[in-house]
Length: 324
Image (tube, rainbow, N blue to C red):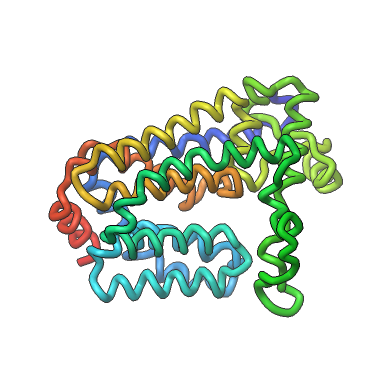
């Protein structure tokens, strides 16, 4: 499908991005995962301090993604590392306020980690798991049928401007609908170019009018190479076949973690993985970065019999080995 320099450049970029799922195999080894996180902790925060004057607000939450994994292991953290997690969270929601997705992901991890040993979460985890897997499909069908658009909930429920974030020129409504147009363009592009089932390949983007002027200036044609919504990228590059396979990976990983684990922490990781499935329909950039890499590390932990066969005591020792 590649026709010019920009197509081949996109292909190389996507080969890197969609090779990140291979990190699942590395996650089968708890020692490797632990050593990698320890290495990151040793240097990354100092690098962030050095880079902070030069990076955008969107970068903070993505850079601090490893702390979301720590948040899921909340019950086994020392007071010092709980403080680190809270500081990372505060930095994400203050300095990184421009990225709603980073704030939401971190908030979910904080809540799951805090309630990881609660009776309420243990009793409801299976219901939440099923809900996270089914909800995006249900809402997508309702949207396509014109019954209910969850992305435009402020108008659907007449909420108005009640949820404003930021201040001054940077202030915006957290419920602004920035997704419907992306879905419309992606689906229309697939139908018009006949790639609904198999996708357009990792070398090509989707036809766009919303970003047409910018895209034409960048690549010479009105075709956007990727979008903010992860599942739309999967659909564009791999079609409906790719979405089915992609969804199966999330469903199987979360199922194994929740129903086939001997400890109480990996099921929490599995529940978070199922949340990331629903979040893939909202945003979750498909990029070669820590956010996407740690998603696949967590998926790998769910598949890993080494992690799932650990007892709570084993998980505690593993965590302590990282943070000591």
